Image (cartoon, rainbow, N blue to C red; front, side):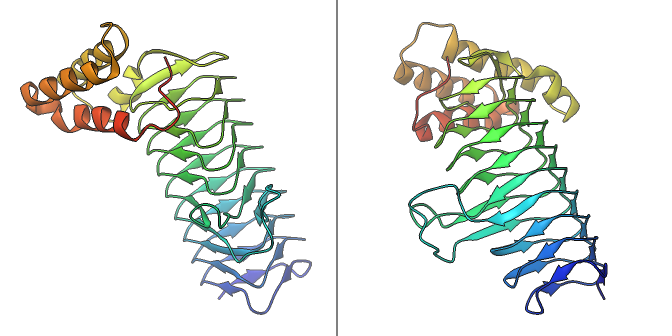
Length: 262
């Protein structure tokens, strides 16, 4: 059974799982589904066709599931989907998707989203990410698992950031970021592999060294992109302990649509 503060407004058509807590003055719309044990603090608005998993925490003054900030949106029943065990801090804004894309904005599991983060329409964020205060995502952005977005980092629409990348403070990102890469600056520039993050996640020294070699092949060898892909494929074949990670690095280059941050 859900616990709802007397001052909260919950549409009778909303679906609340067992153990859900709705705080003072919060508003829950008709098409909202909230999974078990999710805590919604005071003064939170959750609206739209929004589905939320279990064991999430929403802190005060967040706006979740509002219409996209896109003039093309004409009221279509687009969606927002949030997974399990996420922490969403104060003043975050997550918008619905648009029919011009997949029609859904997604956030995975076990993410830590700090205050004032904006997740625009049609963004797809993986799991185990960390977004520091004021990180801002424009529409159609894709963020892989384990990515760290530092404070005031901002990402241009349609950009992709591969898993385990680290985006430094106040970075302005207008191109795609391969997996494992550390970058910073305005405009963004690559500065090597996210070594400390990989160590914390259990990557071996051999795997990290192999990824450092992959980085040098792409960024320091003077190869064209096609030459770098061929060299990475050869490295993948010759480094079995790190083959899956090199493959992820190499295959990302085939999907990059906005060019690679240099």
